[in-house]
Image 1 (spheres, rainbow, N blue to C red):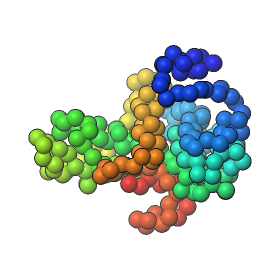
Image 2: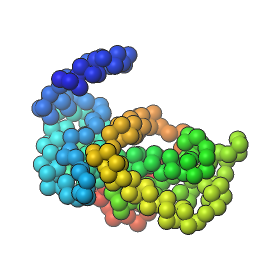
Image 3: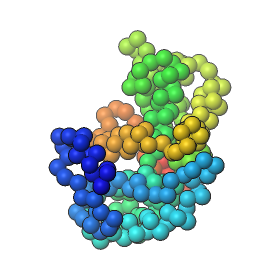
Image 4: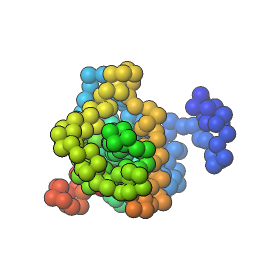
Length: 237
């Protein structure tokens, strides 16, 4: 009820109404977009895999409810960790919804990567584009700046040329992005909140409206591209 009150108090012009419920079938009735954030949160010292057993039950139930009552073209974004695995479980229990309609969020990792690079070069974050997040939303992900571009003084150039520091791009940058979630938990004793919400909003907006000439990364069910095994949820550009 407190969240409903806060949403009302935001006076959001596009918000028509809010239905608070703990019943997935009620929540997912005829929805076109589903943000699945309801997972057991990670605490300090935990890896995302530690959350697995608790969350299988949650995402099985949500998948079954989506299958039963949501639109068949619903766009599903799994935010709750371990996001890739949760997205796969959810998809498996919603066989009537196309697999490509299930995604796991790696946009937070992408935003973190862009932020690191923009700070390193000293430009606004919107002037960095085409950073890629490969793999799992975890410390095993691979943030890839090899195709990234940056605008400096009105001229677009590669990140490699702008930074001219292979050691930074191949080691420090990669490690910082991989460990950023743990660093946030260590600093505030809770996992990322506002930055994750912003990333979820970015992800869904781009999925509905497109991205122009900018690349985005999403965890999707693999079709075998780039030599990744089929039918695993993996982050691709």
